[in-house]
Amino acid sequence: MKIQLNKEILNVEQSEIRKFNDYAQGVGANVILTLGEPDFYTPKEISDSCIEAINNHKTKYGPTLGFYDLRKKICEFELKTNNVNYTPDEVIITHGSTEALTSAFFTMLNPGDEVIIPNPSYPMYRQIIQYKQGKVVTIDTTSSNFQITKEQLDKAITSKTKCIILTSPNNPTGCIYSDETLENVYNAVKDKPIFVLCDDVYNQIVYTKRKPGFVKYQDIKDQIIVCQSYSKSYAMPGWRCGYMLASKEFCIEAAKIHQYMIVALNTFLQDAMIKALDYDPTDMVKSYQQRRDYIYDRLVKMGLDVVKPEGAFYIFPSIKKLGISSLEFCKHFAQEYKVAIIPGYCFEADDYIRLSYCVSMQTIITACDRLEEFINKLRNNK
Image (tube, rainbow, N blue to C red):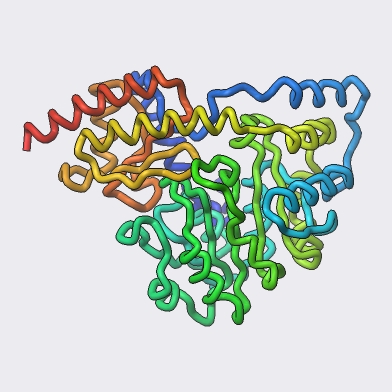
Protein backbone atom coordinates (compact mmCIF):
# COMPACT_ATOMS: atom_id res chain seq x y z
CA MET A 1 0.00 0.00 0.00
CA LYS A 2 1.44 3.36 -1.05
CA ILE A 3 1.12 6.09 1.56
CA GLN A 4 0.79 9.65 0.28
CA LEU A 5 3.78 11.86 1.07
CA ASN A 6 3.84 15.60 1.46
CA LYS A 7 3.01 16.95 -1.99
CA GLU A 8 5.51 19.79 -1.72
CA ILE A 9 8.46 17.51 -0.92
CA LEU A 10 7.74 15.57 -4.10
CA ASN A 11 8.46 18.74 -6.08
CA VAL A 12 11.82 19.41 -4.39
CA GLU A 13 14.68 18.52 -6.72
CA GLN A 14 18.04 17.03 -5.81
CA SER A 15 20.88 19.54 -5.97
CA GLU A 16 21.80 19.87 -9.64
CA ILE A 17 25.37 20.70 -8.61
CA ARG A 18 25.75 17.48 -6.63
CA LYS A 19 23.94 15.51 -9.31
CA PHE A 20 26.29 16.68 -12.06
CA ASN A 21 29.35 16.21 -9.86
CA ASP A 22 28.28 12.58 -9.31
CA TYR A 23 27.62 12.14 -13.04
CA ALA A 24 31.04 13.50 -14.03
CA GLN A 25 32.91 11.29 -11.62
CA GLY A 26 30.74 8.38 -12.75
CA VAL A 27 32.06 8.76 -16.30
CA GLY A 28 35.65 8.83 -15.06
CA ALA A 29 36.38 12.53 -14.57
CA ASN A 30 39.39 12.85 -12.28
CA VAL A 31 40.15 16.59 -12.57
CA ILE A 32 37.46 18.07 -10.37
CA LEU A 33 36.51 21.76 -10.36
CA THR A 34 32.91 21.37 -9.22
CA LEU A 35 32.29 21.89 -5.51
CA GLY A 36 33.07 24.98 -3.46
CA GLU A 37 35.20 23.13 -0.94
CA PRO A 38 38.49 24.79 0.09
CA ASP A 39 41.53 22.60 -0.49
CA PHE A 40 43.08 23.94 2.71
CA TYR A 41 42.76 22.02 5.96
CA THR A 42 41.12 23.65 8.95
CA PRO A 43 43.81 25.67 10.79
CA LYS A 44 45.31 23.66 13.63
CA GLU A 45 44.52 26.15 16.38
CA ILE A 46 40.85 25.97 15.48
CA SER A 47 40.81 22.17 15.51
CA ASP A 48 42.78 22.08 18.75
CA SER A 49 40.20 24.23 20.52
CA CYS A 50 37.51 21.73 19.55
CA ILE A 51 39.59 18.79 20.77
CA GLU A 52 40.19 20.60 24.04
CA ALA A 53 36.46 21.19 24.46
CA ILE A 54 35.79 17.47 23.98
CA ASN A 55 38.53 16.56 26.44
CA ASN A 56 36.92 18.94 28.91
CA HIS A 57 33.63 17.06 28.46
CA LYS A 58 31.84 19.88 26.69
CA THR A 59 29.43 17.34 25.23
CA LYS A 60 26.11 18.15 26.89
CA TYR A 61 23.18 19.90 25.25
CA GLY A 62 23.76 23.56 24.59
CA PRO A 63 21.29 26.46 24.54
CA THR A 64 19.04 26.75 21.51
CA LEU A 65 20.51 30.04 20.31
CA GLY A 66 24.08 28.94 20.99
CA PHE A 67 26.39 29.77 23.87
CA TYR A 68 26.27 33.38 24.98
CA ASP A 69 30.06 33.84 24.78
CA LEU A 70 30.06 32.78 21.13
CA ARG A 71 27.14 35.05 20.23
CA LYS A 72 28.88 37.92 22.02
CA LYS A 73 32.09 37.17 20.12
CA ILE A 74 30.18 37.24 16.81
CA CYS A 75 28.76 40.66 17.69
CA GLU A 76 32.29 41.93 18.40
CA PHE A 77 33.51 40.42 15.13
CA GLU A 78 30.71 42.01 13.11
CA LEU A 79 31.38 45.40 14.70
CA LYS A 80 35.08 45.14 13.87
CA THR A 81 34.61 43.69 10.38
CA ASN A 82 31.47 45.39 9.11
CA ASN A 83 31.01 48.30 11.55
CA VAL A 84 27.51 47.10 12.51
CA ASN A 85 26.00 46.75 15.97
CA TYR A 86 24.28 43.53 16.97
CA THR A 87 23.51 42.13 20.40
CA PRO A 88 23.71 38.45 21.40
CA ASP A 89 19.93 38.10 21.30
CA GLU A 90 20.10 39.04 17.61
CA VAL A 91 22.30 36.02 16.81
CA ILE A 92 21.39 32.35 16.30
CA ILE A 93 24.16 29.76 15.98
CA THR A 94 23.17 27.46 13.12
CA HIS A 95 24.13 24.22 11.41
CA GLY A 96 25.96 26.05 8.64
CA SER A 97 24.51 28.83 6.53
CA THR A 98 22.20 26.30 4.89
CA GLU A 99 20.22 25.87 8.10
CA ALA A 100 20.27 29.62 8.68
CA LEU A 101 18.77 30.19 5.22
CA THR A 102 16.19 27.44 5.69
CA SER A 103 15.17 28.77 9.10
CA ALA A 104 14.86 32.27 7.65
CA PHE A 105 12.62 31.14 4.78
CA PHE A 106 10.48 29.00 7.09
CA THR A 107 10.04 31.99 9.39
CA MET A 108 9.13 34.62 6.81
CA LEU A 109 7.22 32.95 4.00
CA ASN A 110 3.49 32.47 3.61
CA PRO A 111 1.98 30.73 0.55
CA GLY A 112 2.03 33.11 -2.41
CA ASP A 113 4.76 35.38 -1.05
CA GLU A 114 7.26 36.43 -3.69
CA VAL A 115 11.03 36.26 -3.31
CA ILE A 116 13.27 38.09 -5.79
CA ILE A 117 16.40 36.19 -6.80
CA PRO A 118 19.04 37.81 -9.02
CA ASN A 119 20.24 35.18 -11.49
CA PRO A 120 22.67 33.44 -11.88
CA SER A 121 21.99 32.08 -8.41
CA TYR A 122 22.65 29.27 -5.98
CA PRO A 123 19.95 26.62 -6.66
CA MET A 124 19.01 25.96 -3.03
CA TYR A 125 17.05 29.21 -2.78
CA ARG A 126 14.43 28.24 -5.34
CA GLN A 127 13.89 24.78 -3.86
CA ILE A 128 13.23 25.98 -0.30
CA ILE A 129 11.06 28.90 -1.41
CA GLN A 130 8.91 26.66 -3.57
CA TYR A 131 8.69 24.06 -0.80
CA LYS A 132 7.21 26.81 1.38
CA GLN A 133 4.77 27.58 -1.47
CA GLY A 134 6.40 30.90 -2.19
CA LYS A 135 6.87 32.28 -5.68
CA VAL A 136 10.30 32.90 -7.16
CA VAL A 137 10.71 36.09 -9.17
CA THR A 138 14.02 36.25 -11.03
CA ILE A 139 16.14 39.16 -12.21
CA ASP A 140 18.52 38.38 -15.08
CA THR A 141 21.84 40.09 -14.34
CA THR A 142 23.81 38.57 -17.21
CA SER A 143 23.37 41.69 -19.37
CA SER A 144 24.56 44.08 -16.64
CA ASN A 145 27.86 42.47 -15.56
CA PHE A 146 25.93 40.64 -12.83
CA GLN A 147 24.77 43.86 -11.16
CA ILE A 148 21.17 44.82 -10.30
CA THR A 149 19.59 47.89 -11.90
CA LYS A 150 16.85 50.16 -10.60
CA GLU A 151 14.72 49.33 -13.62
CA GLN A 152 14.92 45.60 -12.90
CA LEU A 153 13.87 46.12 -9.29
CA ASP A 154 11.00 48.40 -10.26
CA LYS A 155 9.71 45.71 -12.59
CA ALA A 156 10.19 42.81 -10.15
CA ILE A 157 8.76 44.28 -6.94
CA THR A 158 5.02 43.86 -6.36
CA SER A 159 2.65 44.07 -3.41
CA LYS A 160 3.42 40.38 -2.78
CA THR A 161 7.19 40.78 -2.55
CA LYS A 162 8.43 39.46 0.80
CA CYS A 163 12.19 39.24 0.30
CA ILE A 164 15.15 39.99 -1.97
CA ILE A 165 18.19 37.69 -1.81
CA LEU A 166 21.68 39.13 -2.14
CA THR A 167 24.76 36.91 -2.43
CA SER A 168 27.97 38.93 -2.53
CA PRO A 169 30.61 37.84 -3.38
CA ASN A 170 28.42 35.76 -5.58
CA ASN A 171 28.13 32.08 -6.25
CA PRO A 172 28.52 31.27 -9.16
CA THR A 173 29.96 34.48 -10.67
CA GLY A 174 32.49 35.61 -8.04
CA CYS A 175 31.23 39.18 -8.55
CA ILE A 176 30.68 41.66 -5.73
CA TYR A 177 27.66 43.93 -5.78
CA SER A 178 28.64 47.51 -6.48
CA ASP A 179 27.72 50.50 -4.32
CA GLU A 180 25.21 51.41 -7.01
CA THR A 181 23.55 47.98 -6.84
CA LEU A 182 23.34 48.11 -3.06
CA GLU A 183 21.89 51.61 -3.21
CA ASN A 184 19.34 50.46 -5.78
CA VAL A 185 18.17 47.69 -3.46
CA TYR A 186 18.14 49.98 -0.44
CA ASN A 187 16.01 52.59 -2.19
CA ALA A 188 13.65 49.87 -3.43
CA VAL A 189 12.94 48.40 0.03
CA LYS A 190 13.47 51.16 2.60
CA ASP A 191 9.82 52.19 2.66
CA LYS A 192 8.33 48.76 2.01
CA PRO A 193 7.71 45.65 4.18
CA ILE A 194 10.40 43.64 2.39
CA PHE A 195 13.25 41.64 3.88
CA VAL A 196 16.74 41.61 2.37
CA LEU A 197 18.36 38.23 2.98
CA CYS A 198 22.15 38.50 2.71
CA ASP A 199 23.90 35.19 2.01
CA ASP A 200 27.34 36.40 3.09
CA VAL A 201 29.28 33.14 3.19
CA TYR A 202 32.06 34.46 0.91
CA ASN A 203 32.34 37.97 2.32
CA GLN A 204 35.85 37.49 3.70
CA ILE A 205 37.19 36.08 0.44
CA VAL A 206 37.59 39.40 -1.37
CA TYR A 207 40.38 40.47 -3.74
CA THR A 208 39.63 44.18 -3.80
CA LYS A 209 39.54 46.50 -0.81
CA ARG A 210 37.00 44.90 1.49
CA LYS A 211 34.02 46.92 2.73
CA PRO A 212 30.66 46.09 4.32
CA GLY A 213 27.87 44.85 2.09
CA PHE A 214 24.16 45.54 2.39
CA VAL A 215 24.31 45.13 6.17
CA LYS A 216 25.74 48.66 6.30
CA TYR A 217 22.20 50.07 5.97
CA GLN A 218 21.52 49.91 9.68
CA ASP A 219 18.60 52.34 9.47
CA ILE A 220 16.59 49.39 8.07
CA LYS A 221 18.28 46.81 10.29
CA ASP A 222 14.95 45.12 11.11
CA GLN A 223 14.56 44.25 7.42
CA ILE A 224 18.02 42.67 7.06
CA ILE A 225 18.78 39.01 7.69
CA VAL A 226 22.38 37.85 7.41
CA CYS A 227 23.26 34.18 6.95
CA GLN A 228 26.91 33.36 7.55
CA SER A 229 29.11 30.28 7.34
CA TYR A 230 32.52 29.19 8.59
CA SER A 231 32.96 26.73 5.71
CA LYS A 232 34.63 28.97 3.16
CA SER A 233 36.62 31.61 5.08
CA TYR A 234 38.13 29.21 7.62
CA ALA A 235 38.26 26.00 5.54
CA MET A 236 35.67 24.32 7.76
CA PRO A 237 33.09 22.84 5.34
CA GLY A 238 32.66 19.57 7.22
CA TRP A 239 32.11 21.31 10.55
CA ARG A 240 28.74 22.73 9.45
CA CYS A 241 29.05 25.91 11.51
CA GLY A 242 27.23 29.14 10.80
CA TYR A 243 25.01 31.84 12.22
CA MET A 244 22.09 34.11 11.51
CA LEU A 245 21.93 37.82 12.31
CA ALA A 246 18.49 39.40 12.47
CA SER A 247 16.31 41.56 14.69
CA LYS A 248 15.50 40.18 18.13
CA GLU A 249 11.87 39.79 17.09
CA PHE A 250 12.80 37.77 14.01
CA CYS A 251 15.25 35.62 15.98
CA ILE A 252 12.57 34.77 18.57
CA GLU A 253 10.40 33.33 15.81
CA ALA A 254 13.22 31.76 13.81
CA ALA A 255 14.50 30.02 16.94
CA LYS A 256 11.32 27.97 17.00
CA ILE A 257 11.94 26.18 13.72
CA HIS A 258 15.70 26.15 14.37
CA GLN A 259 15.04 24.32 17.65
CA TYR A 260 12.85 21.70 16.05
CA MET A 261 15.30 21.11 13.20
CA ILE A 262 18.53 20.71 15.20
CA VAL A 263 17.74 21.52 18.90
CA ALA A 264 21.08 23.36 19.09
CA LEU A 265 24.48 23.23 17.42
CA ASN A 266 27.04 20.73 18.75
CA THR A 267 28.43 22.20 21.93
CA PHE A 268 32.12 21.33 21.43
CA LEU A 269 32.16 23.02 18.01
CA GLN A 270 31.33 26.38 19.50
CA ASP A 271 34.71 26.83 21.18
CA ALA A 272 36.27 26.32 17.75
CA MET A 273 33.91 28.92 16.30
CA ILE A 274 35.13 31.45 18.84
CA LYS A 275 38.74 30.62 18.02
CA ALA A 276 38.11 30.91 14.28
CA LEU A 277 36.94 34.50 14.58
CA ASP A 278 40.46 35.43 15.70
CA TYR A 279 42.03 33.65 12.74
CA ASP A 280 43.26 35.77 9.83
CA PRO A 281 42.45 34.04 6.50
CA THR A 282 44.58 36.47 4.46
CA ASP A 283 47.04 33.81 3.28
CA MET A 284 44.21 31.64 1.98
CA VAL A 285 42.69 34.62 0.19
CA LYS A 286 46.03 35.50 -1.42
CA SER A 287 46.34 31.95 -2.69
CA TYR A 288 42.83 32.04 -4.17
CA GLN A 289 43.67 35.36 -5.81
CA GLN A 290 46.74 33.89 -7.49
CA ARG A 291 44.61 31.05 -8.82
CA ARG A 292 41.93 33.52 -9.92
CA ASP A 293 44.48 35.54 -11.86
CA TYR A 294 45.82 32.47 -13.65
CA ILE A 295 42.46 30.96 -14.61
CA TYR A 296 41.04 34.32 -15.68
CA ASP A 297 44.01 35.01 -17.96
CA ARG A 298 43.75 31.55 -19.48
CA LEU A 299 40.02 31.90 -20.18
CA VAL A 300 40.52 35.31 -21.80
CA LYS A 301 43.26 33.87 -24.04
CA MET A 302 40.82 31.11 -25.04
CA GLY A 303 38.53 33.84 -26.35
CA LEU A 304 35.78 33.34 -23.78
CA ASP A 305 33.76 36.27 -22.50
CA VAL A 306 34.23 36.37 -18.74
CA VAL A 307 33.81 38.89 -15.93
CA LYS A 308 36.82 38.92 -13.61
CA PRO A 309 35.76 37.70 -10.15
CA GLU A 310 36.32 40.07 -7.23
CA GLY A 311 35.75 37.45 -4.55
CA ALA A 312 34.73 33.89 -3.67
CA PHE A 313 36.54 31.15 -5.64
CA TYR A 314 34.42 30.67 -8.75
CA ILE A 315 34.66 31.96 -12.29
CA PHE A 316 31.73 31.97 -14.72
CA PRO A 317 32.69 32.31 -18.39
CA SER A 318 30.14 32.48 -21.20
CA ILE A 319 30.07 29.71 -23.81
CA LYS A 320 27.27 31.32 -25.82
CA LYS A 321 29.49 31.83 -28.87
CA LEU A 322 30.17 28.09 -29.05
CA GLY A 323 26.55 27.24 -29.86
CA ILE A 324 26.15 24.42 -27.36
CA SER A 325 24.11 24.10 -24.16
CA SER A 326 25.98 24.17 -20.87
CA LEU A 327 24.84 20.64 -20.02
CA GLU A 328 26.05 19.16 -23.31
CA PHE A 329 29.29 21.12 -23.03
CA CYS A 330 30.03 19.85 -19.54
CA LYS A 331 28.94 16.30 -20.32
CA HIS A 332 31.25 16.06 -23.33
CA PHE A 333 34.08 17.70 -21.38
CA ALA A 334 33.72 15.15 -18.59
CA GLN A 335 33.40 12.19 -20.94
CA GLU A 336 36.19 13.07 -23.38
CA TYR A 337 38.64 15.06 -21.27
CA LYS A 338 37.87 13.74 -17.76
CA VAL A 339 37.40 17.21 -16.29
CA ALA A 340 34.38 18.03 -14.14
CA ILE A 341 32.94 21.55 -14.10
CA ILE A 342 29.37 22.70 -13.46
CA PRO A 343 26.97 23.66 -16.27
CA GLY A 344 25.42 27.08 -15.97
CA TYR A 345 21.88 25.76 -16.22
CA CYS A 346 22.30 24.67 -12.57
CA PHE A 347 22.32 28.40 -11.76
CA GLU A 348 19.59 29.30 -14.26
CA ALA A 349 22.14 30.69 -16.73
CA ASP A 350 22.51 28.16 -19.53
CA ASP A 351 25.03 30.16 -21.59
CA TYR A 352 27.69 29.79 -18.90
CA ILE A 353 29.89 27.27 -17.09
CA ARG A 354 31.21 27.46 -13.54
CA LEU A 355 34.75 26.53 -12.62
CA SER A 356 35.69 26.31 -8.96
CA TYR A 357 39.32 27.24 -8.36
CA CYS A 358 39.64 26.31 -4.68
CA VAL A 359 41.79 23.42 -5.87
CA SER A 360 45.53 23.02 -6.42
CA MET A 361 47.25 25.13 -9.06
CA GLN A 362 48.30 21.99 -10.90
CA THR A 363 44.66 20.90 -11.10
CA ILE A 364 43.75 24.32 -12.51
CA ILE A 365 46.56 24.18 -15.08
CA THR A 366 45.54 20.70 -16.21
CA ALA A 367 41.89 21.71 -16.44
CA CYS A 368 42.72 24.84 -18.46
CA ASP A 369 44.96 22.92 -20.86
CA ARG A 370 42.20 20.41 -21.54
CA LEU A 371 39.54 23.11 -21.73
CA GLU A 372 41.52 24.99 -24.35
CA GLU A 373 41.89 21.81 -26.40
CA PHE A 374 38.16 21.08 -26.11
CA ILE A 375 37.12 24.61 -27.10
CA ASN A 376 39.43 24.57 -30.11
CA LYS A 377 37.88 21.27 -31.17
CA LEU A 378 34.37 22.73 -30.89
CA ARG A 379 35.33 25.76 -32.97
CA ASN A 380 36.99 23.64 -35.64
CA ASN A 381 33.88 21.46 -35.91
CA LYS A 382 31.49 24.38 -36.42
